[in-house]
Length: 184
Image (cartoon, rainbow, N blue to C red):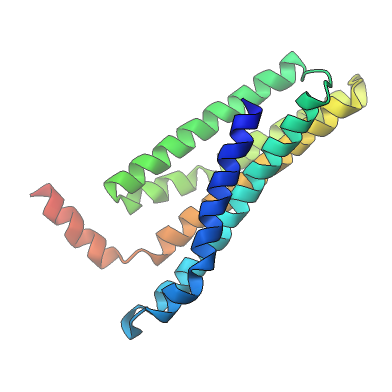
């Protein structure tokens, strides 16, 4: 599964690189009234690159750990990662729904939950610090776990920054008329 995951992330990263490779043509072909879109595009592209780098790193260190036959994570660490995974699944499902509905109002609601998600990951980092100081005996597991948590936090920050960019750049006057058309 980890090998398959690595391949999928490489494919995703290649897609983001392709967007980056076409940046010149995107900006060159914009009409004068859409020049602000180039700054938006650059920012979104940067966040997408940050997200793919985080995913690539998480996949790489996980695969390396397993491939080198290191001990598996503890039950506590695994359970904590499942809690984080469940929260991320809800987050990404909500993001998908918001974009499918073109509901930037829902993006605002998601952005308000950023602190809760960051606190969740930070709490797991603090708990692992306490465990490490008290009784954790596997340096490899501890290193992997901290790497996963820190990179997850980076992934979360990049995701929320991208959402924030959409939310800030959203033209509310256009959204209002779109909502009215859908309601009728």
